[in-house]
Amino acid sequence: MRVLALDIGQVRCGIAISDPAGNIATPLCVLPMNEVEGHAAPFKRILQDWEPELIVSGMPYTMSHQQGPQAQRVRAIAEKVAANCGLPLEFCDERFSSKDAKRILREQGMRESEMRGKVDMIAASLMLQSWLDSHKQ
Image: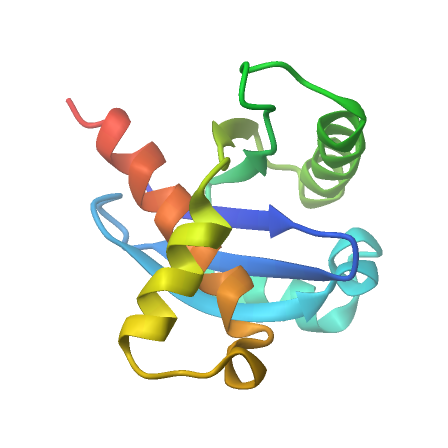
């Protein structure tokens, strides 16, 4: 089953996709949040090209594993996007995904200015890989 992951931010949305077997997550792209939320042509093209069967959205829990105002906003957007796509939706803890993504990019020699945008799709793939690993039979 192919799974699409969304790392929903204020301005951008990182997107990752799994392989058809649901074993490996791959960073795909970053789109403006309004294009994802508005189901605009670039996001529709991703859905058409990759044909996901499920959306997994990152959930920004607090360190005490609570859902604060940011989590409520993300949940509302993710539910709207999933409904527009006609796909089921699940959530995954994303607490350290952006921090880990930045660390990975720094280890590859990237400067902060070069990371802009890349962090979001790497974070989406890290979060998706965690979700895939936790759902293996």
